[in-house]
Every structure is written in C-alpha cells, then in structure tokens.
Length: 456
Image (tube, rainbow, N blue to C red):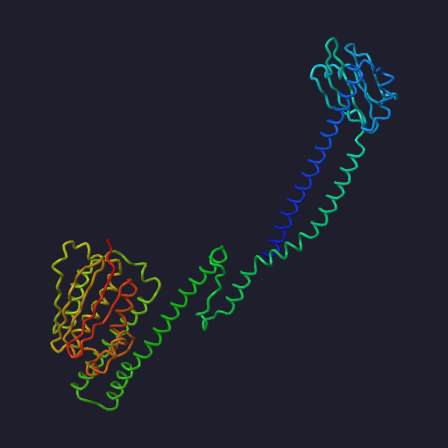
C-alpha cells in the first residue's frame, strides 16, 4: 500500500472515530439533560400540588382536582398521588391505576427523601413532603412526549450528518494526503533530474524548519559530499592523465631508441639510469596526486588527532634532507613561546608533513643557495609558520595563481617541477581549517605564511 493510501485511510479512520465519539457525546448529553430537566419538572409539580392540598385549608381534594384539570403547566398524561404517614391515598389523579408502586417504594422514599424511577412508559418522581404532624409521600409521574420527540429528531440529524461526513472524509483525506506529500513529490521529481552530469542541482528546502525541510537539507548535504567526491575523482583523473603522459612518453621514447640498434654497454647503463630517474619522478608524481585526492576527500578529517606543529617541522626537515643533502632548512621558534602545548593543533600527521615538506622543498628549489628559513610563533590562539626563501620572488600578478594545480610561473621555467606542491599544500591546510598566504617580494625572495587554529 502506498503512503498516500495509508495516510488517507488513517485520516478517514481518525476523523470517523472523532466524529462518532462527538455525535455519541452530544446525544448522551442531550438525553441526560432531557431526563434531569423532566425530573425537575416532575418534582416541581409534586411539590406545588402537595402544598396546595396540605397547606391551603380552603382547598380540598375535589377542588384541587378541578384546579389541576385545567392547569396549563401540567405535564403530558400527568399522574399525581399523595399518601399520608399510613401510606393511605389522600389525593390521586391516576384514575386508571397505571402507576405501579408498592410499600417498598414508599419506604425508600421516606428513607432517602427522593427517588427517581420508571413505571412502564411513565417516568416517576417520589418525594417526601414533611409536615409538623405528618410525613406525606408524593408520587408524580408523566410521559415526556415532547422531550423524546426532540431526542429522536436529534438522533436522526446526528445519524444523517455522520453518514454525510463519513462519505466526505475519504476524498478529504485523499486531498489532505496529496497536499501533505506534495513536498516529497517535489523532492522526488527534483532527485530524478539529478544525474552524474548535474550534481550541482539541489533539492528545495521549503521553509527550512519542518521535518521535510530537514530531510531536504540532509539530502543536499549528501549531494554536497557526492559532488565533492566526483570532483576529486575527476580532478585526479584529469591531473593524472595530464602529468603522466609526459614521463611515460619520455620513457617510451628512450626505450624505443635503445631498441633501434645494438649499443655499447655504457650507453645501456646511461639509458637505464635515465629511465630509472624518470620512474622515480613518476612515483613521486603519483604519490602527490594520491595525496591531493586524499586531502580533498570528506574522509580526510576522520583520522585527525592532536599533533605538535614544531615536531611536524623537524620531521619534515629531516625527511627533506634525506632526499637532497644540498638543501638547507633553518627552523627558529619565537622566544615568547612559554608553553609548548600552545603549538598543538588538530590534524593528520602524514598530510601535514607532506604539506610542510612541499613548502620547504619549493623554497629550497628556487633559492640560489637552496635554503629556506622557517619561523614558528603563536598569537591570538593561532599557530603561525612562516617559510622564507632567497629565490627570485613572485610577481604580484602571479601571486594569486601559484596555488592552482600545475601552474608554474615564468620565473620558474628553468627549474624542473610539476606545479603540484603548493596546490597540494593548500588543499591539506584548507582541510585543517588553516590559511596559507603568499607575501611576494619581487627579486627578494618569497614568504609563505601558514596559520592554524591552536587546540587548547
């Protein structure tokens, strides 16, 4: 069963139960009011008749009978019987003896003072009317013809209206379900429009407050993650295909040249060393591409822990010098740093080492003396690391583009590289809620400034 049908059925059942309970409550309340009202009128007639007979000396039973015969306030088919303390009848309008009573009923009335009961089709009210030297019992009975007619008319109206509303409830429930599910239908229609080629589309979040808006927001966040994953995958494939083509073409060309004719053993050795060097560079390129993909993924933050940025700097320096002993990296800490714990940040140690190593390598690579100076400080709950080299500097018009993948400035054309190092470092630092900026000094070197939020 579809959700719309379920909602319609649930709406129909709930509305029907509420309507039936309401109708029943109205009918029961009306019936109770009719009964109480009629018994009050019986009591009032019993008391007024007893007072006329007992308290007014000028009125006897015959005169009272004539008075009551044409009394406009008499009830339909009214019967009144008055007994003395010996249960002897003093006055009675029940000429046909239709009121059924016994000694037990009269005793109950004398004991409790008032009794409500029924005698056949008559509703009977018995009250105790005490006098100074006597205790009278008055039975007042009548048929509530008009009250029952009104009750019957009410019952007919309630049954008719309940039937009509029960018929209307189902289409109303169907429309209610359609209106309630319309936001979901819009979400479904929108989702059907989203494909791998249109992951930038998002679901309408409505008013942004109710449960459906929360569902749409959750779905949009999932689309954000999917779009990020596809973008990372697409960039990785594009970058890899772009950068791997050149070294693979070079390796293929060298091997083809070797196979064209027999050569001396030394030439084979030289060619093998060249191919091996290209393979090493190819390995390094692949490692960086994989790191770039990992740094851009949503799952990169899952492995974060508390790390010390000063330890990252020393480990990165050691790792860089292993690959090239000609490089020189000088690390200095601000003398105002008193608590070493203020240098703790939240991040991934391997990714941070890769970012720092790339920045250090970039500075050494473009400095004539192959050196870079690193300065570490702490201020305003931030850890700041500055990398300064002695290279040719970066023109101001190129400073905004050096973090783009595979971009290389015109002053770096004489140095081998792929243009991945700084873009990889930026992705890693951005993933750590950090900030990386370049301070260009044309002809006087370059300073790369990295800022991380410190973890207390």
